[in-house]
Length: 370
Image: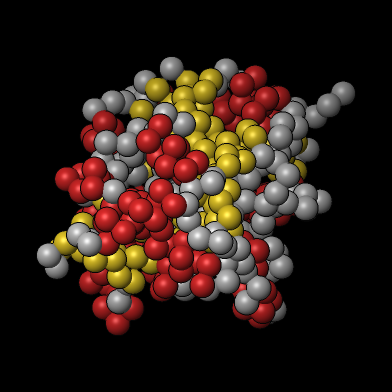
């Protein structure tokens, strides 16, 4: 007779350590999984110091069978999201499970109950811990590793969530684009027109934090009408920038100016996941050396975000950013890019990427309970 599954709330440092460690055993034999740095996982779950939890709350749960951890999930309540969208929503994230419906249903049910007790009328996920961070369940494109700051999971996870009663809320697309060989004639033509109106430059690293302040304002303004978006607080954005500063290529961070005013930005990060795979989640004693060694051979980037103030969107500024990013990527020896993520119903963006030669090769899904 199979042992009973026990769902327990994380209530101690030891519990949290077991919560963090589960994926490293669960994915041990998966060739495509990229072990995240444990120090980064501790940071994103640090409710005392991470700025996300200045307003939001989280409760983590473990699934135990015969004393062994076989699953995990977090229930997340974000008042900033609910205030911005005028709804009563809750979220779940950091979901991992063995291939067992009783484990998944138990975990998801515990998260749902915790959120509903606190007034949530709709529950969405996975988000880790919001759409400003890693999010979405991989439902298509299991034959390659995730790029930097994107999620990965086994194929059977979709069945576990759907078996627990969750249904699709929205799909997020990832496109693969070759960066060598330049851009299309159409994009170049639009870009030339834009360049006569908008000055595109690289980030000024000597004024890094001043530049980040400008980008933060544009980010929150440019994305304000996107499905599920919630503005990042200044403290959150600064922490993200601090983490990205260690891995970014300044030549791939672009700002666009009109009359000396920044009106848009674009960010492409080297896919450091190609180097992280060799560290097994640890910086010490040898992980950092392995990351630095393999980072030299990274040949792909992720076009992570591009934002333009609304009044300049029809001027083709996005095309100018894309053309310049691709030119620079080609010159710096990058061979390809992932452009992600893009909402499935963002038709204009999807068509723009396809005009660049992009091919949709991964799909991530946000699920919900009503």
